[in-house]
Length: 118
Image (cartoon, rainbow, N blue to C red):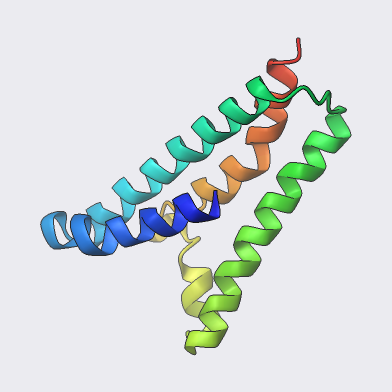
């Protein structure tokens, strides 16, 4: 998923933003990443022979979310981006929709791991 997220970011910067602008590019890119996460999760949990307990699925979602948010803040730190700017990416009231990505990462394992095992 990390590779897909990086490719998505590149696609956003090189293709989307020059064509549709920063804000629409952000929304489209976020939507594409959410669809990619759901697709990857569905494929993984439908193909794996491992039977996960609900608690394990919850922990997987938490791990995916913590790693993603941690990576985002870590990259921001290395680039010298103020923490307030990174936090601003989660401000739905300011029109930012990035929060959909961590929410999807949090619940996709539980959704597909549980649903596909029924």
